[in-house]
Image (cartoon, rainbow, N blue to C red; front, top):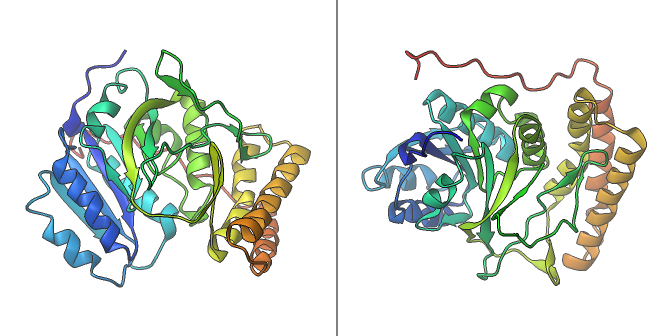
Length: 323
């Protein structure tokens, strides 16, 4: 059991891109938080809207230390979270709480996460969906196939937590000790599968859990196919490309850790492709877009054959003077 959680030891990392109207709601929710984190780091992926001015307008009223960093180019969610975690780590943060710009915090969200901090070092809280319903997140993956397990039980027992082997940057709460061991999130993903892989890497080092505490609300409505307990969201051509291309990065990581099974992983890629076809035809009600899937498959094959590929390295512990 670790020492009691200190809210000021936590840093919230937010990645944003051209969505200042959503970022406003998130920063407003930080103002309303009690307790507050020691820092809020906003990584701006070269937005072309009024994001810079908006963030600066919160500096004196946020109620905590604001760190704003604007990237020179759009590095995607992967690049943004990698940079944001680097900044938080170098600030000396004990806990790093990752989130996109399309969520807002429950007022006592940090306190709810903090109560689990003495027991675990990789924690995922629960989220409310845009309509106020409970959002179901697939918290377990099959490493052999490299896909989420859609029928993982949703209910919690009296312990209030379930072990997970995945991660989601929309709410991942992770201790610096684990970040030091597994390194920063891999910016090469750009978008998609980056948090899945990162959460899986964390679960190899510590007991990772999803807890039965609601700490975030989603603030962006997404077109969905309602399947009862589960939902299938609409996507985009960019997502379709990266969801297939980045299977190659997953393959490298699984191979490095001895869990890669060629036949099972190929089947997982087939199921991923089929799921995206269903998303196109049923949720988005169109047939154009399959070329992006095939382009992702093609480019992924090149990455898979890259013998020079190396994983993200561990981080060096900070000296007392650097903290």
